[in-house]
Image (cartoon, rainbow, N blue to C red; front, side, top):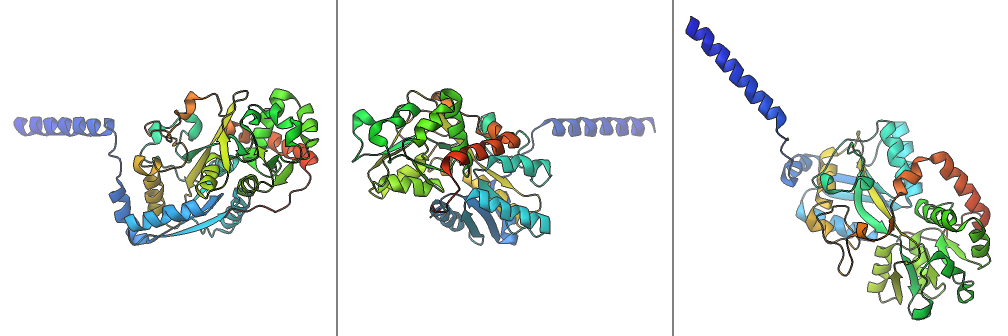
Length: 354
């Protein structure tokens, strides 16, 4: 009897120790195969993405070949239009997408506060700088976008390539400077805000005297430089420029030397009520693998993925990296939108995302 009781105590103690050790050990990260096994039953993944859609269609094709049986549906357009579609679906209780990849960083904080987002930390999450992710894993960067200067190589001499915002005020650029509407585009608003913080609001009077062009969206803006309609901008997206170069257009990017280089995370998130949550986890985890991140035309948020050829790690440059923080103060953001709209005029839908 005594032996039996002693044995039971020893067994219970051993089980307790084993349980404690198991709790102390990190949980095994789920592999892509684990997610795929569950996602096959769902058979689909739907997401909205802000910006040019073509690169995402190409990625979706690669994904579908790697994971047969998962059909990807992409809704493309402007982030600040698509987010309103999401809000309407959430309000109606009829969510049509599993995830979003947007530049409108303020949406993610709002959706998190409303309890709309799924807490999920894909493999590589711990390799990201804090500025590129939500600490709780409800959203994180899918890539790091860079906002260098851009110019037409056939019509801008090497000696005239701008190195600071002040250089865009030179007489040779009058009527040939272009940006997206700052009142419409969050990234452009943030870039303009950095400029007026450094040079004062008088800069805007001088800038408007240059008779700049405003276009909705970066793609249309940057295409206008490729065509020669405009010559320069401080508001480009590097991977769009690289795409235009591959098409043979005479364009080039230039990192400023007189001002900080703006960088911002293109954020992704999965909704808590996603129709296909396992497919969403699979796609976004696959997207963040080193193999796929190395194929990006820009920097990865992961610090263990090399930078694009010819460039240094992004945080080794003098950068402006407060995009997420800027968009958390929605009252200030709305005030700035109205103030900049006073300069640019009302937003005309003359751009595009394809």
